Image (cartoon, rainbow, N blue to C red; front, side, top):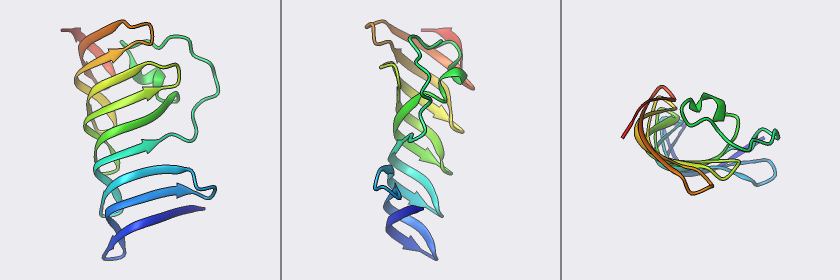
Length: 130
């Protein structure tokens, strides 16, 4: 089961709230509107792939979706929407814009090696470097 503690309005999650699994592990902490993540929040992925990945292909972020650990930033309609930071299981981080749950717009991909890639992504795919 899932446990929700927070605000309600018209029998829906609304305002600030925390969603946890049955063991008390936090799934989401942040703003809600009409039963969906909306506004600022912190989302944890409790189902990270156990497959070890040494290096992610930052040019196509579709391959990273089973390997993200957490996202902190803006949400809309229950999806990553706006500015946010996505932390990946190998230590890489993406800091930038999201739209409809995907990397979309300007951002920085920080490799754990220290390399920084500045670019513009569209639907998770790097379309050009900055």
